Image (tube, rainbow, N blue to C red; front, top):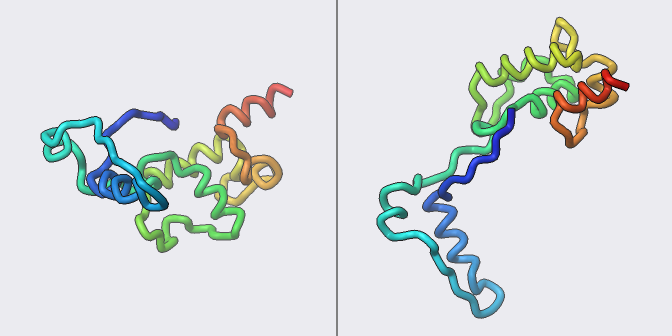
Length: 128
């Protein structure tokens, strides 16, 4: 399940945003946090997005490219193996993958690239 959470940016992101101010003309960077918060709370770098979100879309997309063993793919920042296993398990429950982990006709026709939460889309398909 995707959850959107308000959180502090990283120190690297804060620096990049400050550098962006005034890049094409006069500009200012107003920081709405204290230097103590910056020093003590902000992480140095953000986690890679793939480690923060469900990877079912990634698994489905890779399966559509005939990558059968997604866990063996050389990701720059690999997701946890448990996340990949959970994604594949969920996609099987949603009938997007068959018991062997291959795309089903439903997975090929409707899930690939569809920008909706997959469980919601599955429920809508089943109700019609």
